[in-house]
Length: 326
Image (cartoon, rainbow, N blue to C red; front, side, top):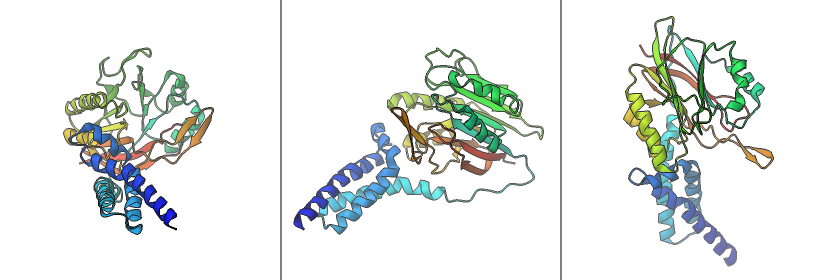
């Protein structure tokens, strides 16, 4: 019995070290950007520190272990719980206004099941479709979409600069070559598509879609956020910003983007990645556990938002309806 108890305490101590310490460091991510990387793992840190704290108490571990476990849980809960609670808030109901439906989706540049993707798009029937990782290998999708979406813009570049925007409404572009490259062999890592709309009802708004790099290297993503912040600040009037930000809402990096642009994030505790992971020649299906795809707005009312069905990508689509605030 003593051996079993000692083994359980050892495992609990390892769990405390693996979860409580990163949770405490993550709390200081606003001051030390390297520590902010731990915030992207808050889903695991929250439940890990909860389990560690319970184990420390039940196994009557030494006071030092109990204190670290409880402090770790408190630190993680401070960041994780508000995001979860915000997802429970009801959305505003609108009437007597023109409603627009949007889908934003990272296609995963290596996927080729375009028929499955088209079926989901037809089922959701968005008015505007924003696509990330829209590679040359998926050019057949453009032909599939042409009948329903006569207005489109494509960016073709390196890494995450492959974007597409398809619309039932006419729009005018507000971009230069540096924003939306046309060279599929180029080295530009990211891009954005920025367009403006004026609907038949007189409603006017702009929409920007982009795809950020991973949080590490830290400076690279920070520079990309800085560029996006500058772009957003130069746009007047109601605005939507959608795409794959490769950042979770628990991170100070994404919170800083919202704070410095004045945008409101509408995606709350919405897990969209990874839906699948390629393992050698097989594909492992997963339940997404990272909220990386986001919808931000200014001057809008988002009345409904949800994850859509799987398309064969490693991300799930995000679909929402909105109207411009009166």
